[in-house]
Image (cartoon, rainbow, N blue to C red; front, side, top):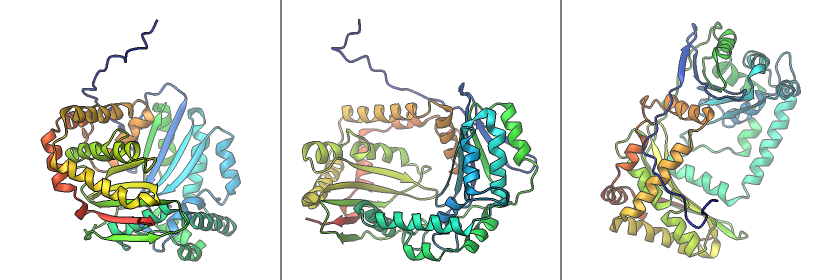
Length: 424
C-alpha cells in the first residue's frame, strides 16, 4: 500500500541532453529538419517563411493574409481546402507573427501525401477571393472592437508603444482604419513577393521516417525557390515613461511594467532568468506570494524575461481590483527593493533552480516538444548545444549574482509604467 502521509523522495534534475534534429537539404537548398522517434502514427509539419508582418507594406495585410491563404486556390474553394484536411484527420493553421509566417499541419502520417497536395496548391495557386476577404475583414474588425473594450488588450497596446515605438514592427498595433483599407491586390502582392516561389524551412516531427522525408522531397525538393532574406530589425532604447488610460466603468485595472533587456546570447541571460523567476516567474514567486496570496489583490501577477533576436525586455503584468492599483504598484516596488537589498536564501534559490530545471526537463518529453527547442535554436541562430548545458547554467547561479542582477537591472525608476483602468 502506498504511504500517502509522506511526500515521495525528491530528486533534482542534474542534466538533460537535447536530441538534435536531423537536417537534410534538398537539391534546391530547401532544408528539412526532423525529429522522428514518436511511436504514434501522427506527424506535425511546419513550413516557415521569412514573411511576417514586418514584411508588409500596409498595416493589416499579413493579419488578413494568414486567414486568406486558406481561402481558396484556382482549383479549390476555401471550404474544399478545409474539407480536404478534415476528411483525412488533418488540421491546418496559418499564423503570421512579426518576422515569420507559419503554416502548421497536424495529421496522420499515412495521409501525408493527401495533405501535401493541398499545401502545394496553396503555395502555388492561392487566389484570395473578394467574398472571403470581406468575411475575414468583418471577423477581424469585430474581434478588434471586442478587444478595444478589454483593459488587458489596451495595456498591451500601450506597452508595445512605450517599449518599441510605433515605427518598429514589434510596436505596431492593428487598427480598424488599416483593416478597412487592405485590398485583394495588397494580399496578392504580399503573396507574390513573400510566399509564392519563395524559399522556406521545413520542420517535421512525430513519426517521421525515410518514407515521409522522401515524400516531402518529392513535393518541395525539385521546385526552384527564390531565397527570401530575413529582416534585421533595429531596436531603439527609449527612456522610461508612464501612461494612464482611464476606464472608469471597469472593476479592474491592468498593470504593465517593463524595460529593455537583452537576448539569449547575453552573458547575463541565465543569471537574470533565475533572478526573474525568484521575483515573479512562477507560482511560488515573491510577487505571487505577496500580491495574490497575502494581499488578495489579484488572481495572478507575473514577470517575464522575453528574449528577441538582438534585443529583449522585462515585463511585469497583472489585473488587479482597481481600488488596489496604487497599492499593488507600491508592493511591486517593495519586492524590487527587497531583492536589491537582501540576498535570497539558499533554500529559496534551490527551490527556484529545481523548478526551472524540472520545467525544462518536462518540456522536452515528446518529439513535438523536442522540435520546438530545435526550431528555436535554428530560427534564433543559437549555438547547436545551447540547451545541453541549460540546467548546469541555471544551477551555477549564486545568491550573490541574484543580488547583482537585481541591482543592475531592477529598479522602479528604470521601468516604464502602463495602467489601464483607474490608478487609485
